[in-house]
Length: 468
Ligand SMILES: [Zn+2]
Image (cartoon, rainbow, N blue to C red; front, top):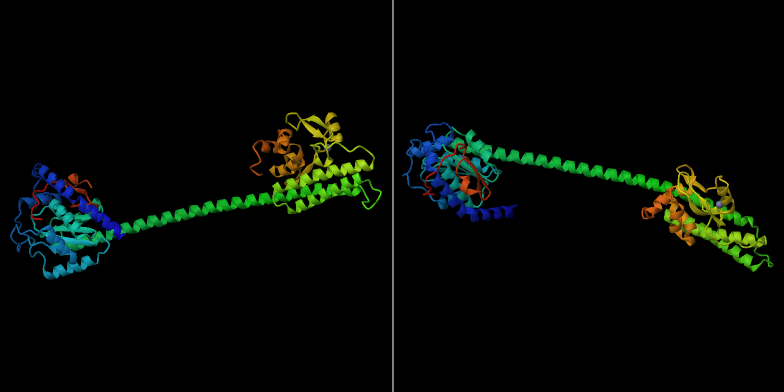
């Protein structure tokens, strides 16, 4: 904060020559405007002209000689240790007791940080403003400077805490009071205004902070609820998927058991024994993979093992019966538990287009006869559905069965028009201060971060400002 102030002050000092040049320009342009002013308007604007026209005002009886003005350097020097400076031109406008009282009161206005300069009665508000900026830049501290004539009639102020409108307002409201009272009242009002501004800024800040917190909390809550629902849904999907997969595993286990094979029989054909052991090993692998599975993707390993085990189970059964070992083709599309398909048949899902799918003997016959094939129905949302319409969680399940036969590429074609098909088409990823004008009239930005006000809304000019 203090380094900011320092930077601002440095900028102010740098802007000073331009500021003075601007003041001179305005000064040269002003006499016409000044002579146009009515001499006795009650507003401070008129007072500028009035006093300018009658510099020897009787309000400062103890006034020092008229051209004994103090320099900016003297005023600034005097304001380093005190908040009040009375120029020699202003003479004895204030008693020592009054000065002490003003200084003491100004010391209490720490937020507006007010310093006051009492000048001769012939000083215009514009010259006061010019002088205050120069003095403030020399002093290098203080947020508000007020100048007032010895008779208390004319006042001008600059501030970094109050804007032009606020300074003008305070000056207008303190108008008409005796010098001492007016300075104190100015300081008091300036302090209250600065404090009120800070309070409303703080209120806005708290309200904004509250809004931000509320928004973040709402967003977090929406996010958490959505995440909770998603996790619940995923957990439910996974539970149903696991139930369906375990049914396939159990079915293979039962089919293998039904072979009723005595592997200890020494007369057992080694080819039968080899197929049987492979079926058993695959079944064991499917069971282990089911237990390990934590995500739908993991089910692909289970159904790969099941496809393998089911083929060798059938091979064993064929050998035992003396039949030919079946050709190892892709599993029956309608129900992979039927084992290897025997042919391709043209089939269309309800409402879908026809495509060629691998089918077991029974399902091929059903399709050819126009009856319903024995479709694998899996647990889904508390009921049963064809596995290819049971949501994306079943994609890895299907993918594992067809892993050796083109995997998802094959399935994508087979399942066009089904839920899994449309999902596979999209990939499995889802799962898977202008000085020249500032002094000319009612005030405004005088540059260097100062706002100027004189309570003077009517414009006016100022003459030479020698002396300051
Ligand atoms: Zn079948």
